[in-house]
Each structure stands twice: as C-alpha cells, then as structure tokens.
Length: 121
Length: 292
Image 1: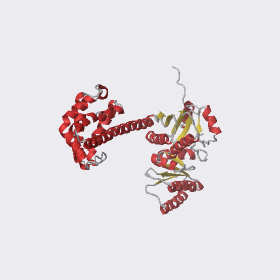
Image 2 (image 1 turned 180 degrees about the horizontal axis):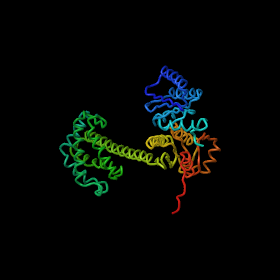
Image 3 (image 1 turned 135 degrees about the vertical axis):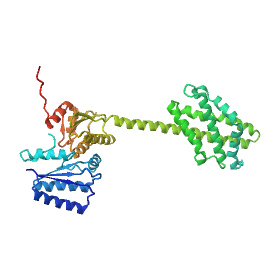
Image 4 (image 1 turned 180 degrees about the vertical axis):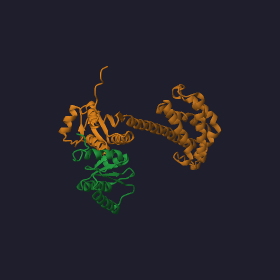
C-alpha cells in the first residue's frame, strides 16, 4: 500500500524551524515507509530563496529515502517572485493542489516504480 | 529709472479689474475671433461664465498678493485650478492647445486698454503695470498649455495600459488546457502581465497544461526567449506544464544560431499539434462516431 505524508506550511520558516521540519519529515518517512510527500504551501504569501532551498533539500532527502515529493498550492505571486529571483526549483515537482498532487504521486508510483517525469516530451 | 513701489503693482491691477470688470469682460469676448471662440464646440453662455469666473479669481488673487505677482504662490491656487479645468475640458472637447492658450492671451488687449486709460501721463506706472499684466497673462497662457500636454500624456498612458491588457488574453481550449496567444513583441512589462494573467487563469480553471502560441511574435532573440522561459518556469512552479507552439521556421533557425537553449520545453510548429500533445498528456482520445 502506498503511504503518503502531507505537510502543511503555514508560518514563516526560519533556520531552526526548517531544520526541525527536515528532521521530523525524514523520521516520519522512515517510520511510515511513506512513498510520497506532499508539501502544501498554499498559505505562504511570501517565499524567499531560503524557503526555495529548503524545499529543494526536502525533495532531495526524501528521494534518498525512496519517497517522491510534490509541492502543491503555490500562489501566483509567489511563483512570479521565485522566477524573478532566478529560482526554478528544478528537481522539485509541483501540482496545483493536494488532489492533483496525490494523483501525480499515484501515477508515478503505479508505473513501474520509476519516478514519473512531469515534464512533457 | 526709479521703480514703482512694489506693493503698488498687484493692488493697482486688482483695482482696475474690480472697477472695469464688465468692460474688460465684454471686450475680451469680442476679442476672441470666431475661430478661437469655436462656436461649434463651446456655447456663448458657457464662455461668458468662464471668462467672468476667471476675471473674478484673478482679482481675488491680485488682492491677496503682496506686491509682486507670484503665479506659483498659494494666493493663485484658485486661478491655476480654473485654468487647469478649462484646459482639460477644452482638450476633451477637441480644442487645439493654441486655441486654449489664445483664450488667455486675448485678455491682453482689453486689460492693456484699461491700464492705459487710467495711467495716461504717468509713463513709468504705465510701463510697470503693463509689464506686470504681460507677465501674469503669459504665465497663465503657458500654464494652460502645460496642463493640456499633461492631460494628453495621461490619455496615452491609459491607452497603453489598456492595450497591454487587451493583447494578452488567456483562453480555455479544453478542461485543463489553456492557450495563450501572444501578439506583438514580448518586453519585460508585457511578460509581467502575461505571467500574472496566465497564473491566475491556471488557478481559476484548474488547468494542468498551458499552450503559449508565439505565431504573432515577430522576432525571438535571447531577451524574448528569456521572457518566454520565465513564463514557462512560473507556470511549472504552480504545477502546469507549458508547450510553446507557433514556432515559425525562421524562428527555429534563429534559436539555433543564437545558441538559445529552450531546456526541456516542448515546442511545436502549430497550435493544432500542441493541442494534440496536450490531449494525449491528459489521456484523452477521440473516436469516430458510429454512422447511423
């Protein structure tokens, strides 16, 4: 059975909180043998390069633990800011909302287990 | 030559306006030739009340002025305001800026006539008052022209903003598929508008795929390509994939010659081909209806 973890970020992240999140998350992935992680940032109105890096790190750590990460709910203004900052978050998959994110994870895991590439070819 | 005591000038002009207002008003209106008056655009009664109000305000400002006439001072706020209103309304009605300025300048002769009548024999006073009156009316005329220019510039700027909005529509091709036809050059201002409209539409329509059609973009150089990639990246961050369609053969050549890397963005020559790819991605197929 596929276990997914849902993380909802609602407050401004600073160093220690981010570290704590990475800690908690990696422990949870291990304990539950989760195959997918959904990070919901729909409450974040401001995203800076720090948070961008944090999201990329979480995705990389999860992959090492054999779980795929999808970031969902990015607000348009946030997307524009990240692009202007030159952060494209390559390597982090994204979806419009939690439903779309779960569909993405299921599709990728129901394949032959290979990570599904959401870039169109 | 000795100068007239300073505080005489504005007080004297005010006094003339006070006592001779009706005469000056009548002559001023007569002075404006039929062409300046533009009977087709402005009614006689409206013109009459405009001129009367102007003279009244000028008199008030002169009385409040202490000596020299300083057109920019607060005492002249009322006059500047009425001039601005007249200038703006004339611009909207279709008067040329010269016609609007002439409205002010035609007050010179009536005013000078009164100044001359009252100061016959006192050439110093005469010259001094006429100079003050000239300075004043010149400043007023120039002011109407400046306001006119500014209001035209405001119109142009507003039209440019409207044009920017109109020329970046986002249309829904299918459930989950948006199309963004871009007409004209893609500069940074336009890119901002395009990104905002596209991302808002993605959220509103819950779309997973956006087709950016550049058939209407005349040239694609490194700057335009950067703008396109920014838009694609922003959409991707929100979970929507982009396909760029409408790539003309010349554009393909330019892209390669300039060494532009479109990374992993799918590009298609036609909107139709891009639409097919989008449908495939969504797992939608069409089958022929059975003939009856």
